Image (tube, rainbow, N blue to C red; front, side, top):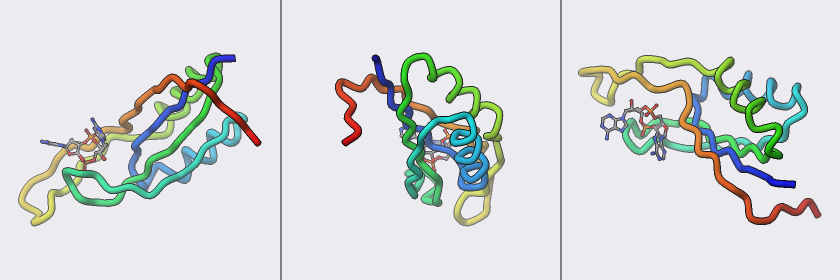
Amino acid sequence: MSVKLLVAVVQDADAPALMERLVKVGLRATKLASTGGFLRQGNTTLLVGVEDHQLEQALSCIREVCRHRLQRLPGGASEVEVGAATVFVVAVERFERI
Ligand code: 2BA
């Protein structure tokens, strides 16, 4: 069995629906509170451990739920488009549930 870890940085507004979707399709996830380095505003990082055959399903959940949005910069002068999600897919050397 080959396991991957998705580290997905998403917007707070999308996190509850994404967690619900992942759990509904039988995937397991951990939600972490995080802060974007550029905007210095809260976002959400999800850790999703999947077997290889579940990887595309997890990515589909993210694509279906998460949305691009315009976010005002601190100071309010201009806006940036924050992506729907930034996803790192990492090969897991060893996985244990104890
Ligand atoms: P932030 O770092 O707060 O970035 C929010 C948005 O600001 C980014 O959206 C991008 O549109 C813009 N931005 C970020 N850095 C910039 C820069 N140096 N110059 C100009 N504009 C910049 P996304 O790219 O969709 O990123 C959303 C969030 O995902 C980021 O929040 C950060 O928390 C995370 N992220 C994105 N790329 C990452 C990376 N390579 N490594 C780690 N975290 C990353």
